[in-house]
Length: 123
Image (cartoon, rainbow, N blue to C red; front, side, top):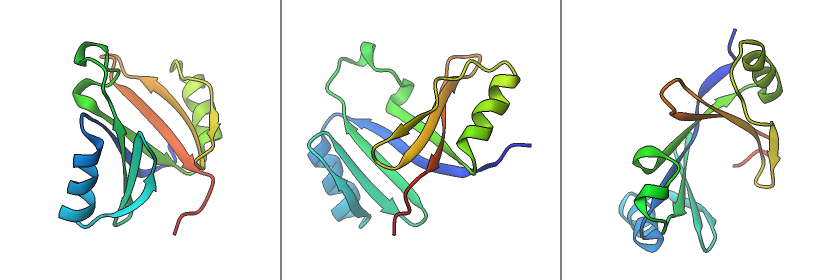
């Protein structure tokens, strides 16, 4: 049985990071948490939005529509093993410096999904 709990965070590739930070932070009133030259992250309720500056040509962007959705799981290691046993071609499990354990895979149409587990508690 899957341990999926819901959406962990939403990732959007944006053409103008400053404009997007103004919209989400000032216009919508979401709480800016991550503020780096190429990345901004906002808390909104129990969700989190990650904005990435994307200046690449549209033809070379990885995600269709510029969005990436990650599902939060209770135990990323167990989910990784469960999906591997089911024949899913998963990436290596990795621990990220921002406090996340994650892996990804593609569905039959090539849509990319990630499963992640927080390794640090954010308040």
